[in-house]
Length: 218
View 1 (cartoon, rainbow, N blue to C red):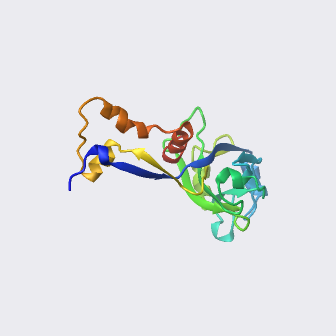
View 2: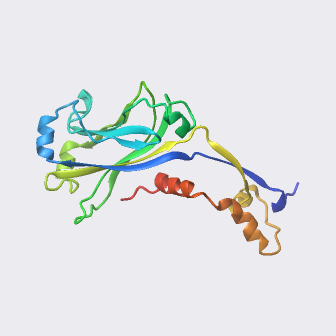
């Protein structure tokens, strides 16, 4: 049974973000801080807002647990229980899905040879308010790296609070959709471009989210 391009419709499911945020935590006097804050103790950033909630970055110079001693641990903490998040995320305030990335920031006058960072997707709730990486980087490796200079380093946190439920919409069939279906476009004039490109236009927010989720190079 043959199908023409004009008979093809596409339903697209996409996870979009209710809010995005970038926050940098600058740490000065690292040598003193690592002496003062032993295993299981953190120095915390100021609170910052995303999706109607308050968050903090927790920096553990010698690990957040016994089994992570000798490592630097970095954790994202949900600071409050404000119910405003329900309207912002489309769900209940006990269940917040977040994609976030911790990165070490290079000093401006000496670019790092390779960016260093790790990405996570996690659900925050009243029972799980602090999530991140216990073994983010070995402390010895950090201290030998170019990310630590003049006793100073900085941690960047990029985060997207994801909507729930996933948004599903109907779009015009794109060229790649027709190719996957084995359908040859039968448009005879330039209306083809207008028709098949119409569904490719994203909102400004969606464009920003795609950039955030796919491009973390510093």
